[in-house]
Each structure stands twice: as C-alpha cells, then as structure tokens.
Image (cartoon, rainbow, N blue to C red; front, side, top):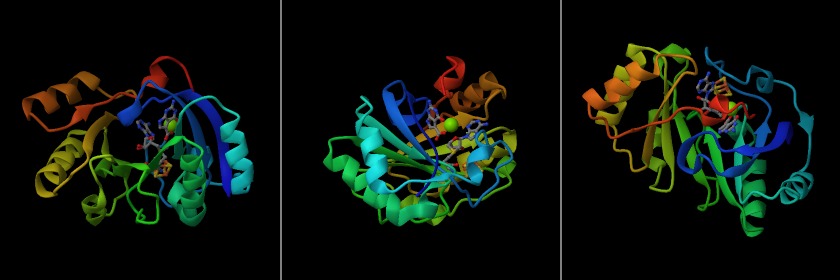
Length: 202
Ligand SMILES: C[S@@+](CC[C@H](N)C(=O)[O-])C[C@H]1O[C@@H](n2cnc3c(N)ncnc32)[C@H](O)[C@@H]1O
Ligand SMILES: Nc1nc2[nH]cc(C(=O)O)c2c(=O)[nH]1
Ligand code: SF4
Ligand SMILES: [Mg+2]
C-alpha cells in the first residue's frame, strides 16, 4: 500500500473527535479540492504491506484508528483487508473518504465518514452513495462560501441520509457566519471545527 504517514494524535474531526487516535494516511488522490490541507499526500507515498501497517498500528496505544489520505479508497481492497485485521485486533476503525468511490467492500464495523464536496472545492461527490450510509456513519460538508451552505442544505433536504451530518468550515473561514446559518436554517447538522488545528497537533 502507498502510505503518506502514520501518526498518533487526538482525533480532530467527526464522531470520535477528541479521542487519541492512530492515523494511517494513504497516498494518492483522484480529486484536487481547492482547500485541501494535505496536498503532499495526493501523490508519492512509501510502500508498506498490510502486515507491516498492522504491526505499526498495534505498537501504538490508541483504541481508535482513522484511515485517511489522500483518498484511501483508491486502494480499497487493501484498505478492507487492513481494516479487518485491525478490527480483529480490537481496534475501532473509521475511514475518511471523498464520496467518489463505493465503500461496500469495507467491513460492517468500519465507521465511514463520507465527504460531500461542495461547489467551492471545485469537485463533486457521487450523491447516490449517501443511501449506503448507516447510523454508525457520518456525512461531512466542508463549506467555505454561501453557495456551499445552500448546496449542503439542498442535499440534506433532498436526500435521505441515515448518518450523522457534520458541517465543517474550511479552516480560517468565517465560523460565526456559518454557525449563524446552521442556527437560522435549523439544519439537522452538527457544526465541527478541526480541533487539532486549534491545539497545534498534527
Ligand atoms: C484530507 S481529506 C482526506 C480524506 C478524503 N480525501 C476526503 O477528502 O474526505 C480529510 C478531511 O479533511 C477535510 N479538509 C481538507 N482540507 C481542509 C481544510 N482546509 N479545511 C477544512 N477541512 C479540510 C476534507 O474535506 C476531509 O473531510
Ligand atoms: N488530528 C487530526 N484529526 C483528523 N481527522 C481527520 C483527519 C484527516 O486528515 O483525514 C485528521 C488529521 O489530519 N488530524
Ligand atoms: S479529496 Fe481529500 S485528499 Fe483529495 S484533494 Fe480533496 S480534501 Fe484533499
Ligand atoms: Mg487532516
């Protein structure tokens, strides 16, 4: 597998935000979001096999493991195998994916966080994948503009989503403006900020 980095930090996003977590950041991405905060991981990477990665993760203490990238599902067969091995070892596994690749090959126990790319990203997710999400999963709209907010609201209103919904401002944008929109529109969504960036952790 092409790996960009493996590191432990506090989970900065989503359902397990704040918990100590081991991150496996896979290299390679099929998109080029305007705001991407890990452009270096979109290419390159070092080759590791699943056994090596499992050993490395089991050497770390955190119960939670977050498989991310780059776009991890570009290596979906290996990711499914890796996740299965980590679950069998007692880890709680989540995955961050950009909503362009089906995730039905993943073990049932994996908590999927599917991004829905909004207009300012310059990219688009496959909204038909939303129907495959379950209550253990989550959807994340990363928003930076009013157009992104109205797009997120239209997707929320027009698609049946059975997962937790997060609205996550692009880092450094007007958090109060976005918070006020969520409140005014009474969206069935949770505002999240990238916690790790505020405490200076990776
Ligand atoms: C780097 S991506 C990797 C996983 C996958 N490629 C995706 O986009 O969901 C991890 C998460 O960080 C978010 N993200 C990237 N850059 C960001 C930024 N500048 N501000 C806020 N969130 C950002 C992405 O939207 C995604 O939810
Ligand atoms: N601390 C921390 N939490 C995260 N949650 C999702 C991340 C990601 O880049 O996918 C991330 C990250 O890069 N760092
Ligand atoms: S899909 Fe994720 S990793 Fe790829 S460019 Fe967008 S934010 Fe970055
Ligand atoms: Mg990150």
